[in-house]
Structure formats: structure tokens, C-alpha cells
Amino acid sequence: MSLTDPIADAITKLRNAYRADHKTVTINYSNINESIARILAEENFINSYELIDKDPAKKIIRKKIFINLRYTNTGEPVLKGIQRISKPGLRVYVNAKNIPSVYNNTGCAILSTNKGVMVDRDACKAKVGGEYVCKVW
Image 1: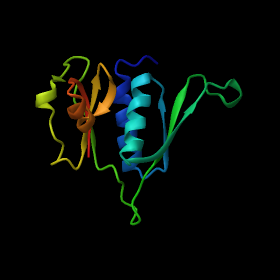
Image 2 (image 1 turned 30 degrees about the vertical axis):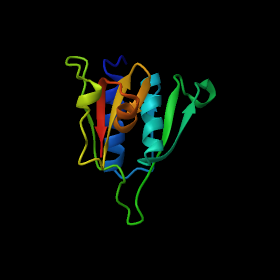
Image 3 (image 1 turned 180 degrees about the vertical axis):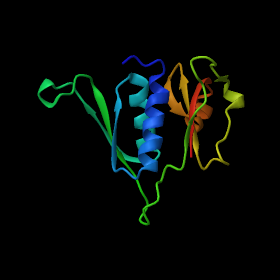
Image 4 (image 1 turned 60 degrees about the horizontal axis):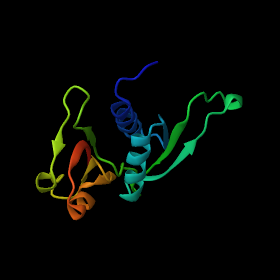
């Protein structure tokens, strides 16, 4: 199955797993998906992530990212929402001065810059802009 937007597919799998109260979710591997998972782990939206190489014995034919989802003590998801902003049909770029804040800085914007994938705070410190990939709250 060919995917035209692997980032949107990964975001949708995360969102659906949280809505179904799953403890883990597996998404397809790509460099940007790994960077998004790394940022979600650093920002404490997920517990951890692990890269799984292809293994014919376990019927894993592609590299995957295994994500442990994070919930509060009362069982509510820590990640309330995640939304794809820049899409293949309509790319959204922001410069360093116009990086949006997400819910009064309680969430974060994930940007793909020339210095790598980073959150809005780090992009402001580095004074770089880039593609506005998604926002998380």
C-alpha cells in the first residue's frame, strides 16, 4: 500500500490509538516520523518509542516505530490533540518571527527546519523558520 502522506498517517494512528485507550501503537518508519516521535517523547506526550527493524520471522516486512502512549493517573490521555498543518497539497511555511504559539504555549508546534525537526521554542532560540508540520496540545 502506497502512502501519499506518511506524516498524516502516523498522526492519525496516534490520535485513533489515544481515542481507543490503547497502550501502544505502531507506525510506519520514516525519518520525519522518527523525529516527531522523538519530540513527543522529549515533550512528555508519550512515554517512549522504539525502532523495530524488519524481521521476516515475526512477519515485519518494513521498519516500524513502536510507541508507548502516556496517560495520567486518572486514565486520561496526556496528548489531547495533534493536528497536521502543512499538507502535500498546501505547504505552510513560517519564518522565525511568525512562529505561532499553540494554546498559549501549553502545546507545541513542530517545525521542519534546515537545522532539523524541532519544536517552536527551539526554533525561536535558533532564529530559524521552516515548514509548519503539525501542532500538539
